[in-house]
Length: 238
Image 1 (cartoon, one colour):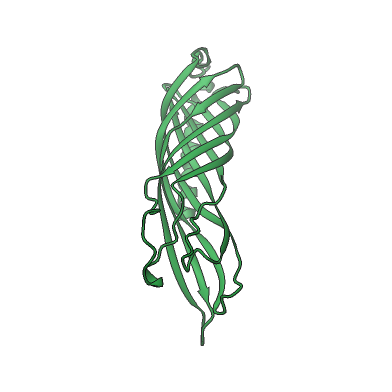
Image 2 (tube, rainbow, N blue to C red; image 1 turned 45 degrees about the vertical axis):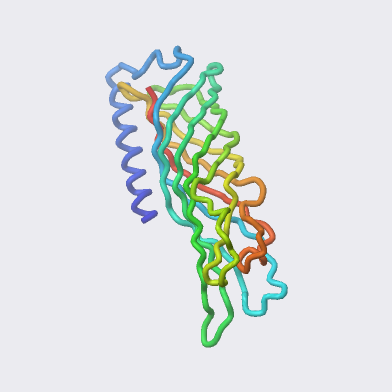
């Protein structure tokens, strides 16, 4: 699935680049007065790969030999609003709905082979990234940029109110509703005839504990668990 996605991404970026460059070749750069407007609006679509960094202590757990998180693919959809600060810097706010999943696998020693139990952690975040964008000089219909800043995420799917006072098999690994992220990334702006199209790769790393230490069997051996996410986004601004 990932290989297919990157193939699609490659052909999409190549096609957009050809479209943008063809206009320059005719001597007519696109959106020549784009920077004269202080505010720009649009929308964003994207794909993400979410995961956890887990630190654990298995003291007292004779049969539990490891805990590891497996990343899963998700997608994003949101709005884009950009405030131009000067020639190179922009303040960007992109409220986004993010669907993400992480699988936390508990490995138990058994004969003749190990036994695995997977706790699926699904999240539906409303995210509010506030990022500074530094853009290079425009070269024809292209410009490269980097972004960095913070993000607040509220998980609509968080099951913090679930009663874990049940049999172990039915207990959940619960995570907090609110998470703060530090974010950094880079991308390329393509100035097309009627709008600006951007392809961006961004990394988000959670700050603070993501899980709820409620004394349940699945949470007890975990010392710390922080979320992380890679996102490929496609921005459309007018």
